[in-house]
View 1 (tube, rainbow, N blue to C red):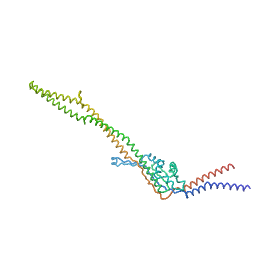
View 2: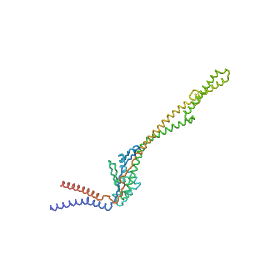
View 3: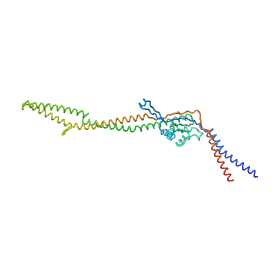
View 4: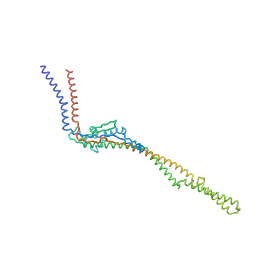
Length: 374
């Protein structure tokens, strides 16, 4: 009787192991094979590769010297782009323009690889990471994308739209950088323009209030009048001296020349009062000239500041324009001819391997526990 009992225990034990193998390895593998062949939809891939470039157009002197450069931009742009492609912002934009939920929910009988259109945007972002594979080489600053979809046209459209949105992002970053480079120069230029306008308005009001275009011109005219009056006074004095020596005391010409001299002297006093003498009610040219010269100094300073600010702004603008960043595609979005995804054989093999590995470990644990209890 011990022999049959041993044979019975031996058969039961191996039957349990065989049954567990069927349940935990063979059956799931069979289900995977059936699902991949009967339900899993074909997926097509489109590849696109690009990098951020910075073009520096040299100045005229550099061009004459044959110097020009074309190099890649800083790593920050590519890093930003790498994160942007995985972001919810990009997924939301593409969902709005391409209706990603509809594109990825085309297979009706493939709940594993398709997307449920009723799921929220957060689930779509997670699904996006499965369908868009990003390969980024930080040393060369190259980004390559493998975009999957359930039709070749959809995969190409999605890849092209990713490239377009990425290009728009780089253009925005470039515009912001150019704006930062010229913002302070533009602010200085605006201040210089305001200062110049203010000084010119003050000079214009001064001329309108005093009815004078240029006090220097009027001063020269006034000095000419004084010079002429002084010459006439000198001639009258000489004539008076001659009359005193040659004419009699009752000569009427002496009274005439005296009145003439008095009139000339009075006129000279009035003209001198205009130039700054005390006691005159008229506007004095010296005060006007002093005020005008002060305004002329302010005007010259404002003009110099404006010219300097304009030159600085033009230089900053020129430098900003010579350094423009753009997205360059070294692989245009490809059009698939055959379906290469999902990798049915690879996935089935991996599932079978891990199931067999887990089953083997469980079986060894089971035998180990059994032997210890025995």
